[in-house]
Amino acid sequence: MSRQFGRHELGQNFLVDRSVIADIERIVAATEGPILEIGPGDGALTRPLSRLGRPITAVELDPRRAKRLAEQTPRHVMVLNEDVLFHRISGTPRVVVGNVPFHITTSTLRWLLAAPHWQTAVLLVQWEVARRRAGIGGASLLTARVWPWFAFEVHSRVDKRAFRPVPTVDGGLLVVHRRPTPLVAERDPYQRFVQTVFTGRGYGLREILTRSAGVPAPVARDWLRTHRVPANALPRDLTAEQWAALWRSVRRPRRTPSP
Image (tube, rainbow, N blue to C red; front, side, top):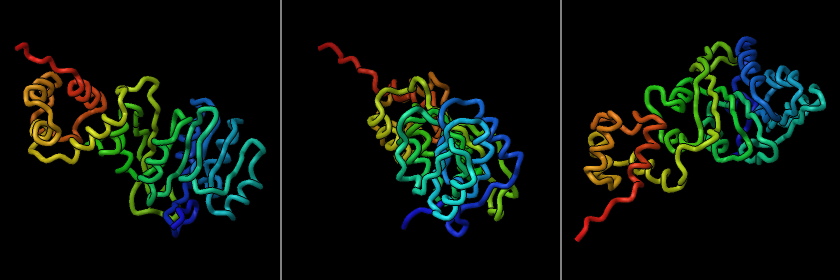
């Protein structure tokens, strides 16, 4: 089934709070480059962002809303009637902005984090999703897998009354930055390692590392002690820097004892 943006029956809640819109505009104004807007709907963000004078590509799947928005915005705003999950970002590094429909937040984040040619993303998502992506109260597997390449920050909590219709949960303004220098060089093996640790069995991180991830017991013990991580901590408790340090420790060549 095709994913729809800008239609409440398929998950879109329109942003109407002017103070939240102004917050997003200020964050985007502090960045540089063209803007890619996800699911602009009726243009609540598109219009104020257009005042920045930067090129805007607004990707809207609803053909009626796309047509109407194209007629109501200036020339430097290009409205595409497309599914953003199939949109290919190219050219000059862009800033991505969007009030993401709650029911496809994970799909949108997976698409975005796999896409090139953007540096900053300013996304309005569910509050709990924003917290988990930023590692507040425990990071998700998705976050841990991409943390070496992206930094996540919760800018603010957005009351559910800022939307129409009013959803059942609050929103969160999540800002994502592509790191200029990744914390880890090897993407695929690192991500496989994180997947193994997150899904591994064991009581606490020390047991998970040794039983499920194949980390030698002395290596696991020394790493936990050096980084002051309790043996019974869980994978979700680690920070981006700790994941990177753990990977470096695991990847470090081991000396072969002399005969």
